[in-house]
Length: 411
Ligand code: SF4
Image 1 (spheres, rainbow, N blue to C red):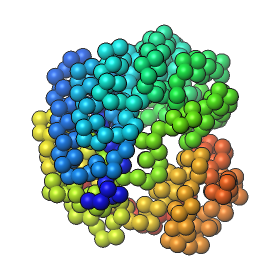
Image 2: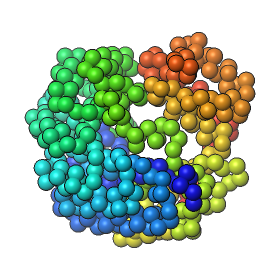
Image 3: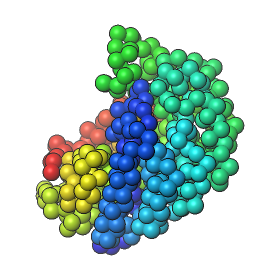
Image 4: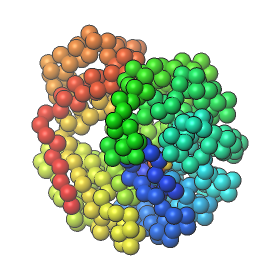
């Protein structure tokens, strides 16, 4: 395999949480402290990492990310050993671990830093105790402040996740949260409007409520408030939800948004591979189907439950759901993802889209420009603030350029 066609980013998913947050529908399950399943699972992921590495998949890997779930629940020994294995397999120049304040002990901090992590992404969500309680978070604001301070002092690049348009949030409390995390000296902030996902306890609690606190207008106001506050303090927005100090953008997430191949290991983890990478994986995963003709990109999600994965970590024992994208579908996907970025669409992507979609592409772009959802900036087509606030009206027409249905399979 040539270095150019290996994966550029590695993601490991640890689907364990001390308790399920009220809004969460991610692949994570409440797990008692010290449950042996966690260490068995971490060992299994380490074994899969070794197997994938022996395929030569990581020769061009630049970034790694251990997410969840709550990776810090593994504790200093378990998480430190896993970080070491990732460093051995991929030698990433950027390595992020996700953390929650309540399980981010000094020992865990020292272990992940000592083992080679370079970044921490901490799920803070709010610095208001009432809001944190409504969201079902385990930490309070004092804990979040104290743990973020310790993380910044450890020398790691620290990112915090914040959530807006939540049940009891006000413009004033949101301002206090933003100012609070800025004052802690973090390098990066991600800001998301709360999504009320079906089947979550938040959804059940507000089933008969119009949830005016989560209206699109409230979401837009809070996102604009965040932008004004963060930019005034030297954080530059580089993606619809992401702000960073100079040089502190998350390169791992940028890989997702710029169509670079990545491998995801663990229950619920997704990968995006080019055909050469997929064929390499097929060498050890005979359960994977052959690619349909004209496939250019394969998306795979690990469907194996965490206990089964822990008991048999071989890659050939995994079950997957798959999607096979043709080149026009992959280009439409890249256009849609590229429209999340401040820098806009790469010129070579625009050239290829014009070759593939002809007049339909120009008509779509002209319409998005006329509606103020895209604009020409520094010679590139780039999203406007309005485009981001009306996200689906921008992303939908770009994805609709993709011809035909995406072929899918399960194995
Ligand atoms: S900590 Fe994160 S992954 Fe775990 S339940 Fe809460 S939101 Fe979901």
